[in-house]
Image (cartoon, rainbow, N blue to C red):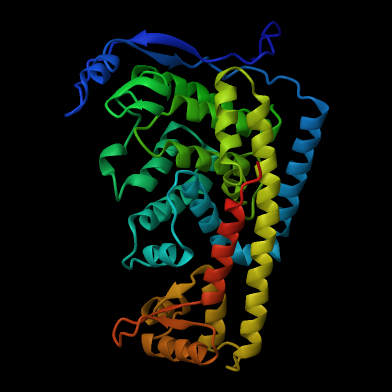
Length: 401
């Protein structure tokens, strides 16, 4: 229950001294070594489970209303217009969220990684983030500590399995300072012995049904990033939490709106809003999420339009009969723009030979082309889809300071 006497002002993060016994780095100067020793100040995160949100000014209220309407309209088109592109939108959200962490990969590289073919390390991490987002949707209705742990595990289990399985058991710090010490860092999240209780409190807040959706999601995300409960993958997991809550609170139900693409357009503003939250100001992160949501809808609509245009062109170019392997593959390519005959056959429920015949028809029509020049284990790409995805990413990277 909410206490009627509870103040509406949002509490700033406090700090407490903690001992530090780390070893100096090899080659570190004596001066730097002395500066990286001794106690440090770790954040103490105030509980928010029953706290009421502050009132917002008229401008922020209008921004929230417009963003909620944008999200609802985009999602409501999911049944007929957007739904065929749901897998692409999810992949776009994953790529944008990863780019915020400076993990950049092309659409082709990501598709190859998802397909299990050789690609860069960043691409594998983006694919891990795809799995985290899928888990976020699957577990949204039962959002709890275990589901958040699973989201983070999906991101890192292949590349950094030592960092998954539960809350962190050591200090972490953000920005500046030393690689071997939290001294001088821009922000030091709570000591690890406070993480469990802080996350239980956060989940209780996230599960509430008495708050306006977008402010609640923005605050839950900022609180999560302030707690920083994992040794790695906190940013991507925190943005997966945004998607889980959008779904849980009924803001979206058909498709995943690539909100991270909106945040990516102004990362300085986004990180500044997280800092302001820690200082007791909720408004900047609420406005950042609302603005990012509306931007993401605009970019998402452009992506859907580009893909729809490509699909129309394919239909005009492909002369195969309706229901043929080639014709049916056109829908598959919108979900999976890189494939081979084995995968195509599995998806269509036909033999590998028949699938290859369909791919050959699409090659002749200019819909797909072979990657490389090999004659065995041939892989094909749909350039129009990959170009649309790369264009989406380029628009998201254009900063609007």
